[in-house]
Amino acid sequence: MTAKKGSYSAQVGHVMDFMSTFTELTGATYPKEYKGHAITPTTGVSLVPSFRGKVVAGHASLFNEHFGARYARSGNWKLVSASRDSTWHLFNLATDKSEMQDVAAQYPDKVRQLESQWHQWATTHQVFPKPGKKK
Image (tube, rainbow, N blue to C red; front, side, top):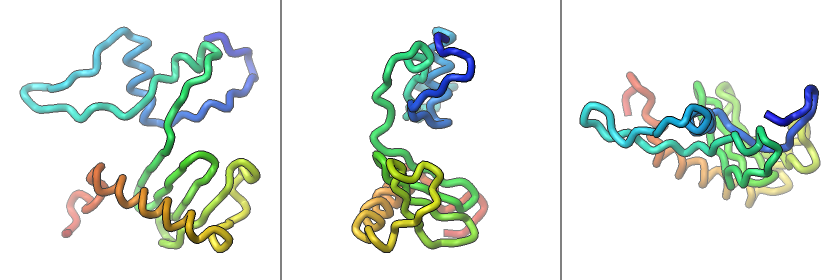
């Protein structure tokens, strides 16, 4: 790593990038199958170049769901919904990195666009139904 102690990087990374990063660092190969079962390819991007001070293209969009909380991020826009609240909240990270100014009412088209993308991602990544829950 070439980063100086206490430095900051604007590189966007995600927990899904860990596998690609560790695979590159160790020289391992991500398997295509295990014991005859196909392995879903990782969607992560290695963070190793950013450790060396290089700019990494990263992800055009990021999506997540954890215990009902969910988000969609595309560029500087981030759509968030807490697990206890199904309301979507929209933030412009270019002007509000702390996510304090919900601008969903001002940009309803952006909310609909990101919500639609989140639902498409949730479907393709088998987010629902949750294990043990009825459909």
